[in-house]
Length: 252
Ligand code: PXP
Image 1 (cartoon, protein in one colour):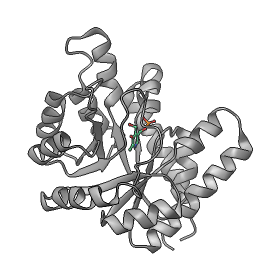
Image 2 (cartoon, helix red, strand yellow; image 1 turned 45 degrees about the horizontal axis):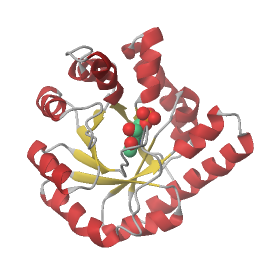
Image 3 (tube, protein in one colour; image 1 turned 45 degrees about the vertical axis):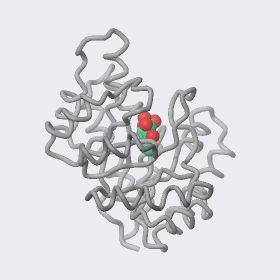
């Protein structure tokens, strides 16, 4: 298949993490978002967590009002978040699982057990003009369940693969990557738009960009970490170059 254009969504949650470590207003996530867009981000992602550990309600409102590119509102599928998302009216919402004790989003959404709850939830967001994606494990079961929930987009969780790469467990990394490859192909066959994210760095982003079905990557922690060393604009430019190199390797 011919490859789709590949968008980069920059997740600015950890700019807020850094700000909240001291309290006060700096560094400002909106300033980071504007800089990210200037450096080539196609959209901005922010996760309003139940415990507000990084992004706050006020951040979300400022981002929506202040950026010129699409805002992707990451959220748990709770009644409170539904109200806030509908009031904020972002371009997109990505539904993720959330546990208070986790450090980041561990594992995909339970789209099988949560089916009956998620169908009307997704429907309300969709009727509010918000494009919904479901953050899922890269498996055929999760794709089938996501398709039956009628969200137009799935974001494949790349965390297990990236963790295996980072810890040098290469056999596991290849198995996990094969799951991402298969899920991207299967999901596209089912008519879903395919996104991917979690734990990506330059190398893993380059590799996953070679999957022609993938339309968007959402990347945060690595970019904010790299920004300490090379600056946010340069980190985003290098990420964009890695993605373009990966995409260029796809047969036309
Ligand atoms: N996509 C989703 C759905 C996420 O929950 C996260 C983490 O907030 C990311 C992408 C970005 O992950 P990372 O910060 O590891 O790049």
